Length: 196
Picture 1 (cartoon, rainbow, N blue to C red):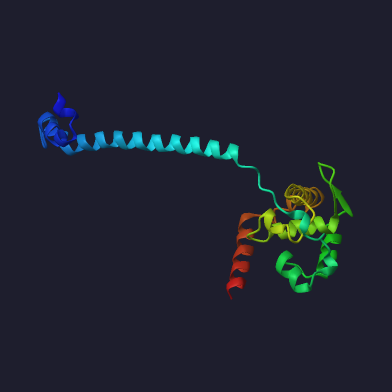
Picture 2 (picture 1 turned 90 degrees about the vertical axis):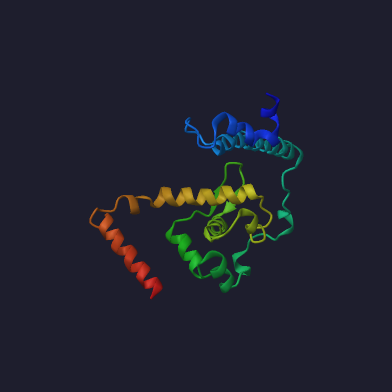
């Protein structure tokens, strides 16, 4: 029995028990494979629990990130150049007031935590967020003096406002304009014109 536990004699023991190609139909290497999988699974579970424990302790000891948003200036669209607006918001500077008027963006938004954000600033927050890739921490330098939570709430508020005010323009289209074959045609034309 002691020879079964000895790793040096493991191959010999499995051959004696099962035979390499014995009548049992289980070759010896399968027996070794199953026993090594059991050991591997023990190691895997051990590593998983060790990592969970380390992550749990790490998340309890680390303080939340403190972003220096106070050091950046307030948002002012007049201080921006046309090329900056095009790069950051994907609209020309002169087109932003027209966009705000067409979307009927109000003069200000009052957020859930009672922060007040001007309408044009909130629209620019959303446009900046929609550029890819963009995280809220990437927006701090442009919309200074605002915590990341305000940036997130303002962008979400503009999305909700635009959807509430204009969703019927898409959802109430007739099926003659909005059906799968016609949409596929639109997609093919726009894809073809992009790569032309």
